[in-house]
Structures are given as structure tokens and as C-alpha cells.
Image 1 (tube, rainbow, N blue to C red):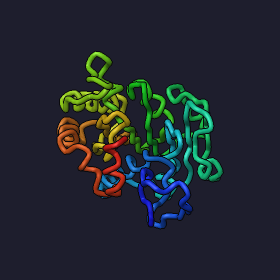
Image 2: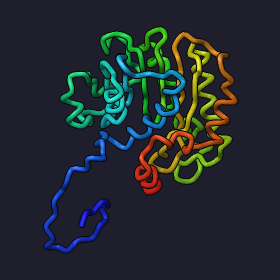
Image 3: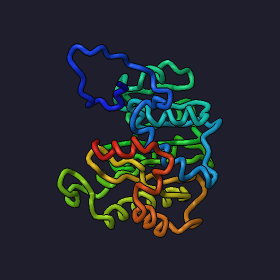
Image 4: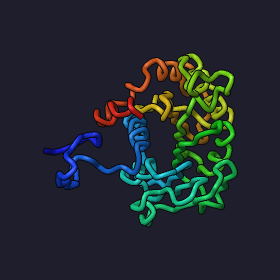
Amino acid sequence: MVARKSATAVELDAPVLVAEDVDDPGWASRGAHKLLGALEAFEPEGFRVDGRRCLDAGASTGGFTDVLLRRGAKEVVAVDVGYGQLVWKLQTDERVKIHDRTNVRSLTPEEIGGQVELVVADLSFISLKLVLPALIACAAEGADIVPMIKPQFEVGKQRLGSGGVVRDPDLRADAVLEVVRFAENSGLGLRGVVASPLPGPSGNVEYFAWLRVGEGAGAVDADELVAEAVRRGPQSAAKGVDNDVTKASKQW
């Protein structure tokens, strides 16, 4: 018998052999599938990772870093306020430059060896409006910044639903648009918005924005892009995500 689920029942004395799953790419974390969904949406519009020096803000165990490396990143600067969380294969990868115990909010280009060409961010318990100035400072002219916008950390505690979940689509749209407007006022141009194919741990719908340094506002209709991303929801980015992972997300 081949058991593909961790809950599969077996006899106490049954011999168990753990076999490698050749179809499983072995991503560093579940978060990898979130970024993969965004890339599936943005790459047809010209987004690229290959050959670029990248910053992963809030790297944690390295899901985003793993995706960037497999997409051909030249180097990934992995920054996190925690310590020793990156999975071993990434800790020992010479393309990964680890900056643990580092507050992204006060990050400077000098700390990470100069500006980067691509920034991704997965941050919690803080508004992106407080972090974007540092991320922009660390990004070179023409760089792309792809933060994951989490409405639960943008709307304020008074507007959160039970369990800390933002259920009102209008509130989600307002939260995403606030971050986008802040980014545009900071000199970034909006290129795309898409919902993460997987929800957050409590079931919150989260969103990725594709922003470009030095492009400026007005190239696209931000209100329209955000409204469409909220309307379509996670399924708009799920086509490149393994079906088993998508189903499993309902249990997280």
C-alpha cells in the first residue's frame, strides 16, 4: 500500500518505508506556492526573475527564496527578524546571503551589499506602508517590487472580523488600494495585482502587487486592477498551483 496522506491508518507493527516522491519538487515551505501563483500571473506580462539579484523580505523558512532560485535568480538576500529559520538546503546554498535578526523596516542598501533588482516580501503584524520606504531604498531604478498585501494587517483591528479574518470584499479592496496608492505616491508604478492562490493561516485572502521603481503612477487604472483581483479571488492565480496543494489549503 502507498500512503499519500499523513492521516493514513496503519497497523502498529506494519513496516513503514518513506519513499521519495519524484513528482514533489520539495519546496521549502507552503509559501512557495503563493509566490508561484503570482509569477504565473505576472510572467506572461513580462515579469522575470532570471539573472537578477533579489531581496526576500521576511524570508522565514525560505519558500519565496526557493522559488526565486529555481526561477534563475543570480543571488537572493534573505532577510528575517528571526534566526536560523531557513531550511538547510538554502542555508548552504552559496547564492543565498542570510541576514537574520534584521528588522526589514530599518533595512538599508549598505547592509545588504547594495541595491537589488527584485524585491519580494511576506511580512506579518505590520502594515506594508511602514515597510515600503525601506524596500524602495534597497531597490535599484527599474527594479520590481512584489509584496504580499495582507488586508488583516492593513484594515486596523476595529474592522477585523472574528478570528482576525477580513471577510468583506470591499474592505479587502480598500486595504489593497491603500497600499497601492502609498506605493504610487512613493514613486512606484503599478503593473499588476492578483490574489494569492492559497489563503493565509486563518483563511484570509491575500494579494500580490507588482510594482516597478521609477515608473510612476497612471500607467494602469489601479482601482480597476484591484477590484478585478478581489472579484476573481484566489482562483485567478491558482492555475499553476498543484491541485492537491489547493485542496489542502482549505485545511490550513
